[in-house]
Structures are given as C-alpha cells and as structure tokens.
Length: 464
Image: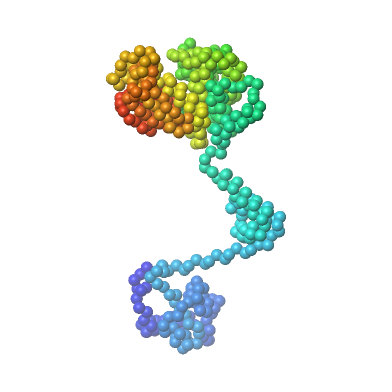
C-alpha cells in the first residue's frame, strides 16, 4: 500500500487531467454514458467498481451538476481498511414447512448434527411444540454422547462379579468355582472378551513383553497371537498337574520352566501363531476351571511345579490370573484400547501372593550375593525379626509385614525398620517387570538399603 493513498485530496490539482479523461469516454453525440459497453469504473449509476454504493467526496457534486450526468465518486478508504470489502452476509436459512412424520424421521440426523441448515431449523422449531419428539431428541442426543466417548465401552470388571454373586445367591450352583480359582476364571473371561472382535490384522500386531533378569530390564518382541500361545504354554503347567493334556504335546521340553515351554512352543510351531490359537487357549482355560471345581477342597494344596520352584494349586491359579491380566494389558496397549485392573477382591489376592513370596525371593537373592542391606541378624524360625511394612493403597489394598532376616522369621511391627506405600496396580506392575524399582511411585520411610532390596526383589519375581 503506497503512502500517496493517505495524501490530502486536492480537487483543483487533478481537474484538467480528469476532464480530459472524461471527455474521451463520452460519446460524440451527447452526454449519456454507454452503460452496456463501459468497462471502466462506471459499472452503474452511483456505484463503485464492484457495484457497491459510492460515498460523496467534496467537490464531486459540483462537477456532476456541470456535466449533466451522475457524479462518479471514488471509494473511500481508511487506515483500518486494507482495501478489501466486507464479505456479504449469508442469508438466514429459510424455514421449511414439513409434516410431523418427516420431522420425526429427521431426529436421528439432527442428533448427529447431519441435517441441512433449513432442516435443522425446522426440527428445532418443531421440538418447541411437540413433547414426544422433544423426549426422543434428548434420548438420541444422550446416545450420541455415548458413541463419542473416548474411554472403554466395555463393562467394568466389577459388574460381572456383582451380577454373578446376585445370581448365585438366588440359585446356588451345583458345582461352585472355588474362591481361589475365581480370579483366574474372571481374568480369562475378560481377556477372551477383548479378543473376540479382533481381525487378522490385530492378531499380528506387535507386542513387547517386559520383565527383569539380574536386576536388568529385558524385552522380547512377539505378536498378540504369540502372547496367547505363551499363556497357553504356561497354563499347561497347571493342566498337567491336574492330569489334563499338555497343550505342547511332543514339543514339551525336559526343563518345565515357563520360559523354556514358551520358547519351545514358539520354535516348534510350523507357522507363527495366528488367531487360531484363541480356540485351544479358551478351551484349556474352561477345562482348568471345570476341573478345579470338581476337585476336593483339599486339592488347593496340590503342588504345581514351575521348574525351579513349586506353588500350591490355589497360589498357581492366582499366579495364572495375575499373568493373564498383565498380558491382557500388553495386548490392549498394542491395539490402543483401555484395559481396567481386576476387581478389588481379586487384586488383593494377587498382591497377597506377591507379598507372601517376597521373603523367599529375598533369601534367594541373598544367597546369590545380590543383597545390599547389611543389617541382617540371625533369627530362629517363627521368631520376630527386622521387618518392612508394605502398605498397598487403593482397591485391593492392605498392609503386610515382610520379614527381612529370614523367610521363616515372623514379621513384627516392633522390629519395623522401613515402610513402603504403593498403589495396588502399581505394585503388581512392579512385580510383573512393567515398572522399574527406581520409577515405582513408592512412598519410602526408613532403611534405604532394605527398601531397595524389597523393590528389586519384587521386580525380580517377573518372568516372560
């Protein structure tokens, strides 16, 4: 924009030049302009180049009177006006007159904001006078809100438990599932519900398994189908202990550890696992629940070998429920889908199992020379000794006194040397190797070396 635009307008300075140009544009025979052929700024009487009304400029009316034709006034500009004219205001949509049945059929499109402007206006005017359609419109708008939620649309894990408890109170089962197997039954059902809608592409989505070995984070890449194959292979340890068929068959290795069985299953398959692995995994989980339900209550003490150690059957079922939940989160993360922790009662059982295993894990680390704390004292079996208070907050929470000197010692509040506070889900993820001991959101008070030993021991319980 040039500076001469803002110079004062001088009528006499440009008068000769303007009169010469105007005479050249006038026809020879008269003073009337050629309205149809004039391509200059005189696009119409009293308008500017774009057809907008022109404003008066001092001196223009006198010249117009002397020439015998309408005055031609240049458009007015200002410092605020960049030379562009304001856009034309869009006309308001016309109101349509539609029948009631037509307006009612448009309610769904209106709720989704998919109506044309004139249709939306007609629907909104109709809703002001029709109560039935207004109620239907509100119901549809609420439904649209549910469809647009970013969080999981799945039912909460606690709802299934409450519904089953209510049903079982009305009609007790002839063969009830033992309490120590309820968590496994619930977590396998939740994971199966997540898997049921997966297409072929999702089954091959990459999943990175994480755990700790020698106090170092370890990862292994597989697929969703590979994770289910891993769960089926390790569940086979419980299946063989109950006398059921081993899912590995001839592929079963001599060393019956979870990692060895998983590697044997992955290597021995002629093709990488696909969605076909879901059916045998689900059938095996149903067989496990059905079998433990028909066994005697004392069967919960039956030993289940994990290769290097053993767990009683009731703890092994809790361990399998815990791993099913953890790997369910891995799968959900791979497909960017939310996955809730277990119910408080089941989460409490998983935390309790890890807390009861910590003393033995601390002893194994002590024998391997991985202990940092130097305040250990010899304590007789069953006698109180140095203890760490493990406080689990939130759903499934509680408090456990972890003996530090010997797995056979008794936790004692009088000999407490340290205190750790964690959320229940955070502690379980630490025990699964998904959270490092250094990053665990733990409130810590007391002996730092003892706290470090317990956190590292919790992480070392993880495995593939």
